[in-house]
Image (cartoon, rainbow, N blue to C red; front, side):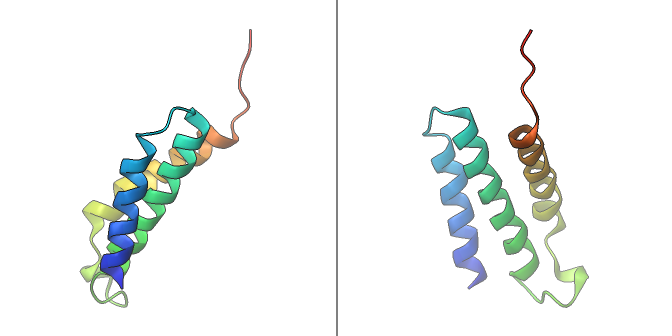
Length: 78
């Protein structure tokens, strides 16, 4: 099951680059990053933190938070 989540995450990350609207790109990318975090946790034994794929989880968790920030931040117009 985890492999399918990984494929879904890849689909959303790549699919986001095919779009033009920045807000939609950020939303799709955020969803892909969340899928990669889930993938990194559940690919092996999720009960053992040592089995988690931290090189996948950490950057995607950070990127998901960056996307949330940009999606919720008020735009500054001068």
